[in-house]
Image (cartoon, rainbow, N blue to C red; front, side, top):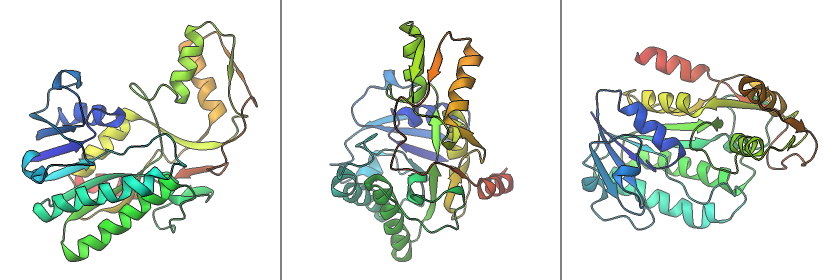
Length: 281
């Protein structure tokens, strides 16, 4: 099997490449502007092009893969930017449709829990999508477009709604890197929100395992949550990291307001994911 990965040099992409290296497959990594030396492992091939202006023979350049794991998306972490539906959405659809028209048979796409919008509690794939910010809206719109495309040009689609990730290589303005940097600077307090919001967290390595496993499921998956199914408070997460690393720092709770683009308590329902991967193993 040949699997191509877009956004291979990104936070998730690098972990997906590492996971694919342990699987029986040929791997093609698409990057925007990076050398093979910057990737964590050496894939079978590295292809460099911009998804905003892809080559007309992009499918051929990617080696005519059996599966594409599509992780590339620009404009983050500004979830409220109009860029997501003004530039990103049309460019993403043009690129993916071009691959399907050229013969791509299976597609695994990274979606987002923000597609559920302000709905609280456990979130299952059966819930109606109600995105409440431009990023969630654009991701959900792309999902709808691809599902309509399936009616005209059949292909397998796994639309993977990711929840909260952490781990090596994440953006420096993310929670864990900010905490680590505060410790390195010798700060006694770590500024954060009240910390009582409940979220669904997974190490990025676990997410990579699930994404790659879904790429080997040889049927149409549709929407599937990749999540832990366990609600954890942000405060509890931070305090856990501090304990695990024996860091001499204390959370300063309530320094920042709670985000207004997400509900106070939500987490994913992983039952469909478990059923799919249990059947495929």
